[in-house]
Amino acid sequence: MDAVTTRIQAPYFGYSILAFLVLNWRAIFLLFMLDAPANERIAIFEQETSFWTVVVFPLLAGAILAILTPWSRYIFEHLSQKPFSLRDRLQLNADHQRTILQTELEQARSELFGQKEEELIDRAKRDEEIANIEDEEVKKRLVSELAALRAERDKLSSQVSSTRASADPDVLSKESVSLIKAAAKNKRGTILTPKTLSGRSINAGDSVFGDQDAKSYALYESALEDLEVQGYVKPKGSKRDIFELTHKGWNIAESL
Image (cartoon, rainbow, N blue to C red; front, side, top):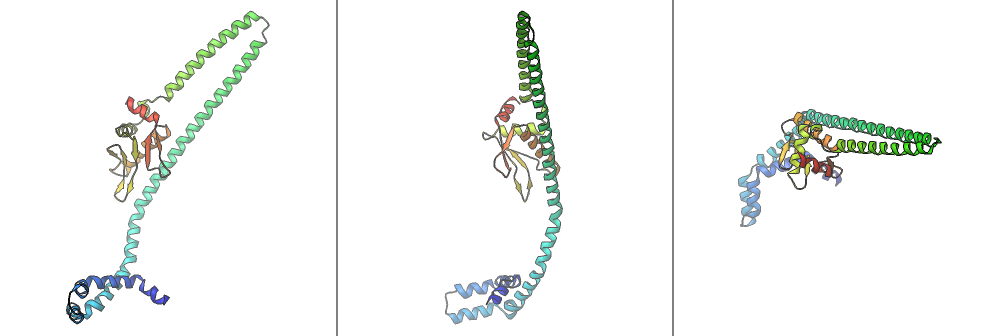
């Protein structure tokens, strides 16, 4: 029984049955739907069919389709191998560039923390040197002047950091600016990266970017990655096909 079931489920018999239905659909329709005695319906079925349409052609069509189907799959996979490979290469290259940029940012942050640590150590040493001064009047004057100098320096450092952290359109590429402007026109502030059989694109608001060719898509994909690294957008979910503007992103959109 299992052997019979396996043979029936084989592609060859499936193709043959499909060909039988296509070749004899009219006769089958009349056989089951005609309001007439059974012998008349059988007679009409025999008139509408022949040995060729019932046996020969279905078996022949099943054999041809069973032979051609694996070859058609092979040809399709061979033709689609190149674009899939190029797509994967672009994705890997984008991931590589994002990793490099994140590494550079981490190194800069580490150097900044190192400088702050050295500054704290230098301050402690100066405070210790002032504490060793015996003249109380000189000590008070130095402490006052040093406190004022440090306050002014801290204020200046805070202003510089705030300026660097603020949105500067000149730092962003024109593609990144275009994405932010388009996304801000939508009240949700979303940027979509749909991937369909017809191609890939980046949708921001009512605008579509990077749908011309693979080169233009890679350009806007890199711009989106820059926005993510700089904190202007963030992904929603693990699929990374939906991004939304952050508070920093909305602020720069208002200033553009």
